[in-house]
Image (cartoon, rainbow, N blue to C red; front, side):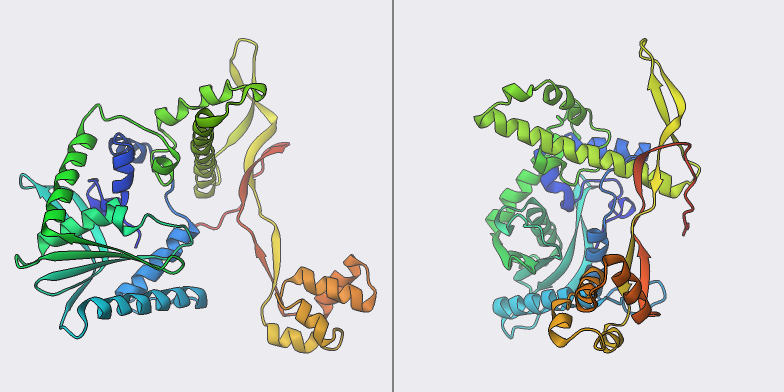
Length: 395
């Protein structure tokens, strides 16, 4: 599930451990980004989908105390992950009795004070062996358990909270598209990992901890909007002339810098879109720059939220198919079986020898009451003319 800053107490977390190892200064900077209200990568449809699936797998209930409801796609992913994880439990423990914990946050304490934490998806354990399973619901390829810093910290946290008879911790990353990745930690492995973790903690707590932007470190970094090290990349990239683009290692370095800046620019736009969505009175007026480099407002253009395109969808395909059978033969219906409105209009135009506009009107008549219209999400754009307020339905 998605982690909140409240439950992490503003301290380092296992889910960001890889970033801390790559860019030590990012931990302190993320606190400043939150204070400014300018954190990047706050949420996404993929993250929200993953949070729902994780909640279902953990048996979490909603605010009304009822079971989490998933759509067909989410349920298919959740059931597949659950089955794959159960197979791994049987492989490792066989018929041996086990205990289980789900979605629990564990803390690492140093000198009696909380220093870092991690929340696992599922732990199955006996007095001597603990299996830590982490579910990944997306399509992106992940670091294998062998080299995954998040799983290394979770292994140490679980070991510290297990009975003293524990002899091994097995960590697994359970995915839909990339199978199961596994690493086993002996007591000696856990001791070495613990030492590395303490070293990383000391590094990121250093007031002079360095910022080291890279495509990997900046991928989900909440500091991306405010990071000066990222902003400093703009000038060297902008000074590169088209006729003098470098080759070899220098070319690879330039591409890495461009990748970081692309994410930086994307997150800046998302920040302003969030501001406009949250407050309909928020303005981004047009401007002009004088020869003395002074900026003043103009009214002939502005940035504003522009409604997304209207998308038509068929609400009940079975009823639609029965009505369309009068106009389209079986093969034509089969060609349009993706159920998109555009393909059906094309098939109808071909069958009845209609223009595109006539086919659209005819399809609306045939499927009257079966077509629903949805609006795509509004986006921030540079538009001409006086800015207009966009009506936004607030929660």
